[in-house]
Length: 172
Image 1 (cartoon, rainbow, N blue to C red):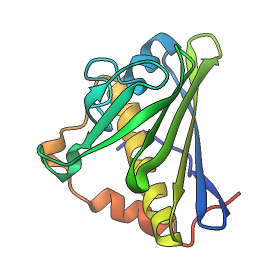
Image 2: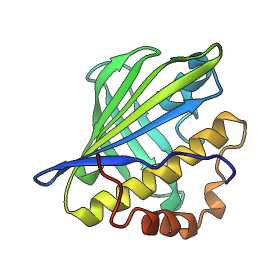
Image 3: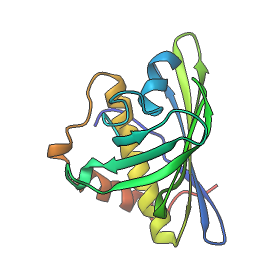
């Protein structure tokens, strides 16, 4: 992985953790938006298969993580914020929680992506999610450069490395 993603941060209130990442990507919003907003195979290239995706506020979404195999379990949810080429937010059932992508132009041809994930659980879950999102955002940068992740060759090695790096974990 040759893309550098700055470490994410987290804020904890009770058992709610809000994770944050900010990326400056060398691609225009028009290129980044479809990849984070579930259009076509955009999400599959770096995150999960979008088995169901209704691109509007209140629309249904079901994401199936492919690092657990091609038949991984789909996690249902709803689109809880939608502003074309600006904000895509999915709230999923279970521990995945609220996932928000906010994109805006950066410089002449780039994009700033502000990513937020709000989850409920213990500190181990916070650490796991920071590591997992960090890894997925590395995959996003690669996918935008034309190198989508090959889920068939996925191993947990990089995730474990990142998980260790987040112990005890950056917090804001």
